Length: 361
Image 1 (cartoon, rainbow, N blue to C red):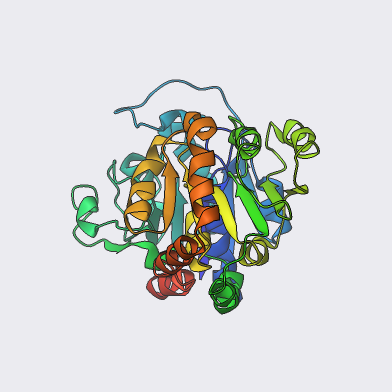
Image 2 (image 1 turned 90 degrees about the horizontal axis):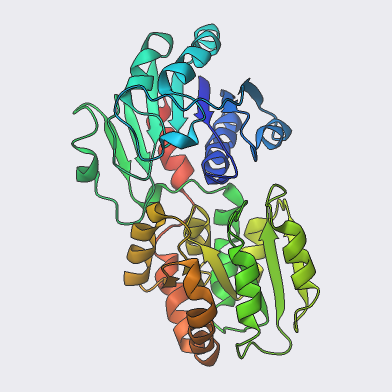
């Protein structure tokens, strides 16, 4: 099959959309399929990273268009163009490639864009988390824990196949491979390694706030802190400077390729409520989760109700609430065991394989 993926990364929207599309594309490539990407040149894009993974990328120029064509979507500003402009720019690319599947993962695109390109693809897959706009897709994936397919009934054709729930979460194969090792080591919980991962961009520097707040916790003296950031993170230099002043050994890791191994070897995480939520669940990693965007609130609430995480609803809560939450977890190995077991029930790492079954024509 030939597959084209329309997806963006930027300082505004982060890196999660591209990373999950890369996971799916790599799984498809492993089975002999041809995948190509269409991405706009936003500040903070991951076009170079996609190419380094071995995929062709067709670039759309960065623009400053603010004109609106039709009903305004909540995330319209993320596109950097109108839907009509984006569709026009994509048409010549997609017409030439003539894909079996067009896959789109973008909160700023809806049925208007999909219809404008319909003559140039055989089938359409949408990846979404919001259930807030119409689609004309043949297949729709929403990997949110607790998502009900009924949420998409007003937004999709009756013929659309809906894959809803964290059992379909798109995780790289190394997460499934390390799952047993990670879960086994948590049966006798230690607290010697703390992981901080606030997304590839962290435009508001939640990471820096977390490091400051950690100074007011009972974290063991022999604990090592690992901070993961993306190469485009605007606060990277500040975080590195702060890390060097921490009371515990603190390492800042940039653009890592072994996230699964790192998560498996860590005992506790402080993380954003984005796509990495499902990675941490697969490996049973106890987590204090920080909501960085409104569209993450429902994910965080469901995970907290399931006993998989503690949640901070806003980065502003970090200074006051994070130390108390961490101290509860530090003082109770049993609480960390229970959190790990609850998290491990939410995703098992087989989601990509499940999704690909529905892409086979």
